[in-house]
Length: 190
Image (cartoon, rainbow, N blue to C red):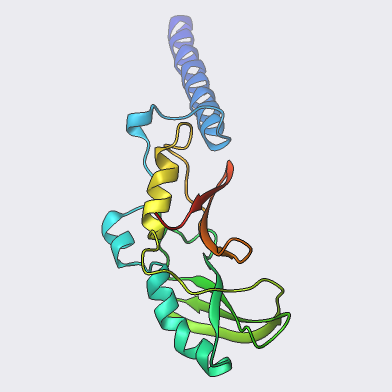
């Protein structure tokens, strides 16, 4: 009987140790202290088929442009961004924020929010930056996201959002690709 207790005790101790180790490893994964080998990692928010169906910047701009022109007939885009947290690795989303400006209005902008492919908010706001014409040869958000993920140290970084920003002083558009490591700025034209 004493030998049986020892076997049962060993099994219980083994199970306790196994559960403790399993819980510890899980905690280390969730805290980001350890990670899967590179080939086993998966981007849980990325589904290439779904990403292709999500809107890119031009889609969001097409949806918002008419409403912006109703606000002011000479409205031009100044800023566009995917909503953080709902951006695919391809830099696509069905939720966008766009800000338009008018050369005729000083320190005013027109903010449009898109959610699930529909305009949810359209309002005039204080805004000091200027907008500009979106070039025909604009690099798609997907190319900007792919470029950032090709950079050393960013291969497995989750894309949090992509931003298209007009810099009026140099008449140039830039992509800002936001990851947990920060924002990488990329010229948005070749």
